[in-house]
Length: 116
Length: 109
Image 1 (tube, rainbow over the protein chains, first blue to last red):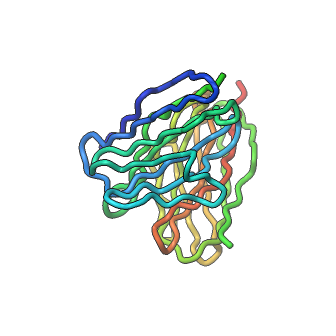
Image 2 (image 1 turned 90 degrees about the horizontal axis):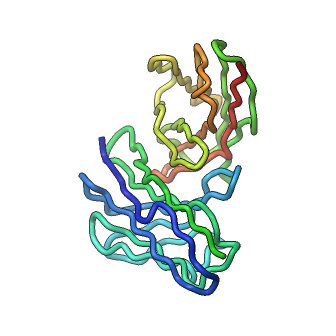
């Protein structure tokens, strides 16, 4: 099956710094990738849709200037959390859609971000 | 608006059967997914239904009624490792996934 990787799997950073999270499709090309955030004991919240070769589409309430998304190639999307604050501490997950039915989402393993 | 409803939490006994219900309202419909998510991990795919009826896959089965906007996930012969959150998600007319809040399933010995 299709594999999506994320790096790093966990990161601790100081308040005010920036953190970059990479999402890679390892054995398939993904023109679209999705970025989710999940707080403890809550469900997935879609943050943005990353599109190769064009600007990302952000969900309502998600700050574009704070969460920078770059879909650099057909296998790589990055999410940069700028000027991180403790409230940005969360589990960030990316996914890429399969082609054709069942349009399954292939999820990366997630990145645990802790901002101190 | 688009909406997915599923129970917040359910408890069942090891070896028993449990049914997790999901109702959906979406702009168009291109299928319904069930995912399993263990704490601290990414979701893993369980099933996909786009036609009415029951799809069986080992101990897990998923049912869909498009006319009722309803689906359920049936787990048989429950094992302790089945303790997890189960996420229902519907694919709308734009092929965008609309996620439910998830059902936390607690399995007791």
